[in-house]
Amino acid sequence: MYLYSPLMKFDMKAAFVKDSSKVVVEDVLKPEMGSGEVLVRMSACGICGSDLEKVYGKYSQPSTRLGHEPSGIITDVGENVPDFKKGDRVFVHHHVPCYSCHFCQHGNETMCKKYSETNLSPCGLAEEFIVPEWNVSHGGVLKIPDSMSFDEATMIEPLACCVRSWNKLSFQKGDSVAIFGVGSTGMMHVMLSHVHEFQKIFCIDVNDFRLDFAKKFNITDAIKSSQPELKNKILSETDNRGVDIAIVATGNLHALSDALDLVRKGGVVMLFGIPSTGAILNVDMSMVYSKEITLFTSYAASDADTNAALNLIASSKIDVKKLITHRYQIIDTPKAFEHAHNGADSMKIIITN
Ligand SMILES: [Zn+2]
Ligand SMILES: [Zn+2]
Image (cartoon, rainbow, N blue to C red; front, side, top):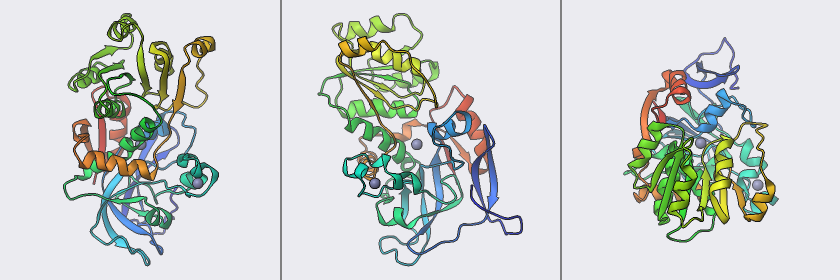
């Protein structure tokens, strides 16, 4: 928690998780800036599934900080910041790895200790926040082109997480994919499937709003997960093989179970959504073995992924604007979280300032 004392002068608002399942907007002290740091006025910050998991679920990495997808304008720079100036329009990545440890050297930057230690102060869902020196000097602050809106820039982080997961997969042009859970990141996977020239794209969800939303994106079929014909529909469209790739963009393990069932022999399942701590899946491992299924997981994004995502948005290959369905002011952050948690009618909800 960001430290403050009642005797201090409060001069900005920031959102935190309080107790369990509660989001509060508090008046906090404007953070003081040190050498090598920059102060950013947040313009837009998306609410992510991992934020919701921190508030309403059992996230395995407990933190009271909310918001890690902020874009905004640099309003002050500390000493020794050669690359940025006041007025720069930026996307800020909250975590930056060390680039030298065993994990980093093996391409597992998001497993690096430094990666999880680095963070924004007080957090991304604040009127203003400090970016630590390490992030500023090691690729954690990305200037965005004038043509890119702050709304688009707040989508860099979630898209980067999707890009990272795709970089782990091998596939061919014309392949088939099933995406389980078509919330905003699931829809980014749909868009990336088009970028990679997939021929068959199946979207599976429990939510009718999302299925109808997905249908507008030139997909093969949008199927309700409870539908008994789910398997037959996919088999009939894939020469009875099943899909080449199944992406599970939900923490619901029923979807993972369906993915293992519907992926073809030799296929790949990507667990992208965040299961709750302690979530257990009963799986017939002989089926996994005999089908020669590869299971990948992918956590967060590195600097290379955020740059790739920025370029996909800047070059209009991915139109993230289509995914933003609701905007709330920072003071209404608790309402926005309620909406994201309970609302069946939303894709990406962003907080603006
Ligand atoms: Zn996120
Ligand atoms: Zn490292």
